[in-house]
Length: 208
Image 1 (tube, helix red, strand yellow):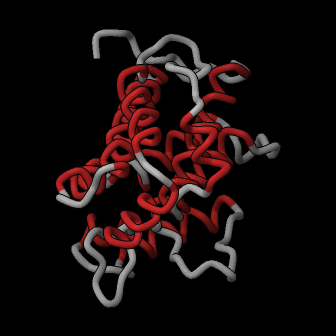
Image 2 (image 1 turned 135 degrees about the vertical axis):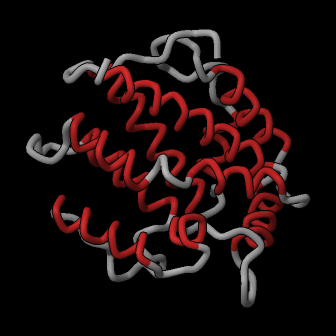
């Protein structure tokens, strides 16, 4: 990307709200297909998200266009085809698979240790383990938007992002994009990849 990455600064409310909102949106899209209300919001979204600069303009527009070309039922069918089904899914949504080749392996243990240090636990009502892509994205949203400044700060965001997000999101997005049945979720994967790249650049600049 030709434009400079966003520089994170503690207390920059516009950037922080924007980041938290995007993490929250992606967490929603990866845990379940959008319902009618969310689909309408996405289809009616402006060309560029309400954010400083336009670094993500193109992948965001592709996501909006994909939502406009999709219906709730067709995207639900696509989600089921890619991520659900009986037995082994077409595409795994779990970090352990991309980091170790198996589910419920050491990466999940390491993630649970990090979550324990942050005082976070999985909702027992959820079937997904903590290394589900939606879960780790939601943790990032919390670390940005939460009220506990001892936990919700840039340093904790940087540590968690580098240990539990950046390490596997790209091959995960590649797996979704490469699947022949991916249409709407190919755009979700492309935007996820682009957003994570912007986040990585921003965290790198913290140390510059």
